[in-house]
Image (cartoon, rainbow, N blue to C red):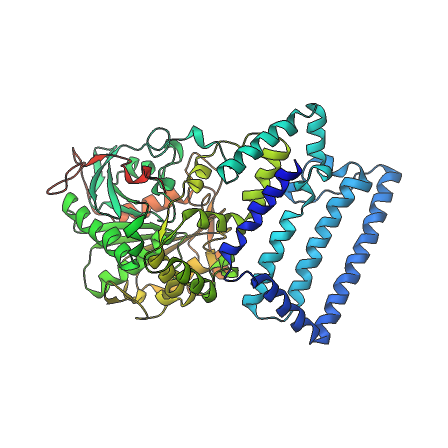
Length: 566
């Protein structure tokens, strides 16, 4: 078991070199903090006070425990979900004390970091690296300090530990933590099952046209640009939470990009290739297949970012091909790109450019590891406790299956995106970038836009998504959804979990919007459907078959590209 624990720790911290530009990065950040703090007496004084407050809280903790033993009142439990079980409040001198001390130390570390006057990028890095270790050292993650684990082991006569050890060995062999039972999902069988056909393909995408489910449809078709850092079917998971099926059921002809897994020569593909072959060629095909003059375009995450750039290109060329633009959890302005800003900087880009070169491939597992590390408690240690310490199987989740169904990225495209789109924030600056040899000015976009941000998004912060409303030049509707980057977007009506804010004033900042907006206790999907229908022309008869003109049916959905492995 000790050897297995060592392998687990090595797997966790092995990911760090892929996220930083130098093996000495952590040490450099620490040295910067120490030298800055040491040179400013007022900072040292604040740090000293933080320690004094910590010791005061420790004294109060002992008093609380002693009071509990005298009068029998349970100490108040913490809101942290890792310690929700009542077992954490038992054995006050051991489990409760360990838990509370851990939380106090975590608070102390964060307070000490906050007192420093080091520059913001360095402070973000220090917070990120510190949090990795804080998360890893939680008493919930260890057998001897987790009362739930010990109780279960006793109840099962140790069988839970044996099962957990087997789970750990299995995950070590496969090289990643099991967040769900991947064997229970198969693309085309029980996920990505909405009926349709591949009607166009090139070296980069397959274009899927979905079969209509209504007799009448809106004139303007809906073109969905999925994020190419994952598979497309996040928007077509199971029938009950499929955004694609929802749109088809509400009378839209839906087309979807299914991105190919880059391999070999595809490492040379650029962002221009993604714009041309992924979007512009697809828009031409959709217009010819449907006969529609305009296409409603929807982009999710990075797919929405590229959609914004392509929309600006079309506007610059006076090609009025888009009827509406919907941007889901999408950043156009990258002045604040969330927790990723702690690890993405120019030295990292230079490191990747050197390692990957002009024609290399970035493995999709590296991207997944980065996102897992950002939310380590939920996406790593939660499963360590459940799978290994408690010996349970991970819950079935089509979303987590999708998260782990990795794809690759062309190095040239990826490093360009990091350097020019994210770090230099090129899309937010008029004519700072060229896409397909055309200067990009987001302000030229006059097409009606529907922008969705989610309140707890750790990848595309809602404040940053909101700034899109100030960049585009036409009608815009902003929606603030509840929850995060995935759950706030994949929020079907039958789910009933998350509502949204709408109708607030857009002229100021995000806080002002929320204060002036109205809350609706339902999914934003319903509001979006009504908005889109108002911008999609008259109702016409649904087509009897897929494709049209030179665009013939190639194969049934979900197609073959989505089934390719890395």
